[in-house]
Image 1 (cartoon, protein in one colour):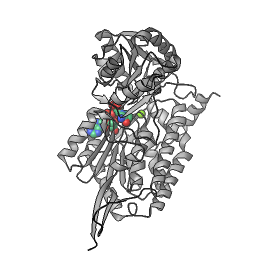
Image 2 (spheres, protein in one colour):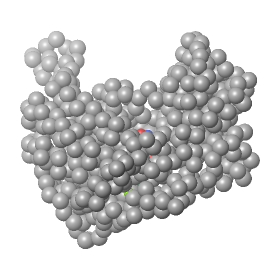
Image 3 (cartoon, helix red, strand yellow):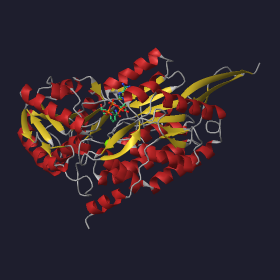
Image 4 (cartoon, helix red, strand yellow):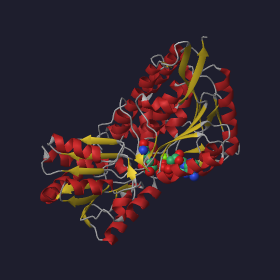
Length: 496
Ligand code: NAP
Ligand code: MG
């Protein structure tokens, strides 16, 4: 039996967790409403999931507030909170095969990625932040000698995490792991396209000993559950990852309600700049393909704008086109598949419409440009490369969130930087050169939260991640992430 067949057999025995997790229990939405959870692998309905709205949000916030105020999480000895979070991480690790299969079924990414990339990163993130709990020190200000001037960090209280579908559990972990470590109560709203893993880990948190009300999960739609969290008068913070458009809604919700803290990880249109003095043209081409086709291009940092110096342009684009072949969509349940489906039909149609827009704008399709695997009933798109793109075209300015690369050529360093920065986004930028002076100079000039030199993904849990400009506010990952889940208190003690 092939590995894919083996996975297909496992699917028949899955009993999906599909309800909200409120105050320590799985419950139906108060309205009784559900929505279909569709697998983009073949278009099949996997299960019906609770569609939470205002009433469920009210219940969860009430439970979160009570749990936070009780101190059974926020003020226990740090070592105890660390141990509970390490146990939670260990349980996720123990169930990672099952979680990886859920992730692949739910959003169509290849099983090998779900298991060996996403789930390992989730567990690593959870362990890393758990370890910070008893290693963070407060400060003493160098104030008057006859005083004690303490600067301490305290948890915010009730933190809502509203996350997207491209790395469903990983984007959630980037929020809940530091938020829980800092002592907050967390309410997680997964994207409607990919709620299954978030719902499943709720009971693992409870099994690990996370108290009732401290980790809750509310599946549902953005406009109902997401908005209700954003406007709630008793939610202290929303940590959001998703589109720039919806990120701005959260700023509005906060302004129209209780001025809650908002952190935003939003969209991107990352440039990948190839200077003609690049040390290894072949490697740069291979990574240029991986940098845009990985996860079917549904990556906020996807290197979607390929900026190539004029004199190597033709040779380079030819090489990238050759590497694109390996990314032809395959069965997501086959461990050899590199690229799976798009997350849903809507996203596939959106990507196809951008391909048509690019064609109409006068860009040339060098590779791909069509849907794929239509016989499967699922939603797949061929890796697509546009050549002769002008940076002012919509395909170079707007986030497509699909496997579509726009090739733009440039003359010199100054022009490369000008094109790279000519975007509303500033999440990530990559550049390839063997000249160390050029590398530093260009890296400094790029307006992005992350700059990779001779790489397209230098990300790690130890390094902060987030956007300049309209790519966001605040940072995920690293110790810097803890800053946003705490607030600073100054306590002055007069010794006179
Ligand atoms: P999205 O449409 O902005 O949705 C993100 C989350 O917001 C989902 O949970 C969604 O719920 C919710 N939401 C939607 N409309 C809402 C509203 N009116 N009020 C409150 N909440 C609302 O983004 P997506 O399509 O899921 O994900 C793709 C986007 O995420 C891309 O723009 C990508 O760049 C970005 N992203 C950024 C990062 C980063 O770290 N910077 C990482 C990954 C992805 P529903 O799903 O139920 O609508
Ligand atoms: Mg789904």
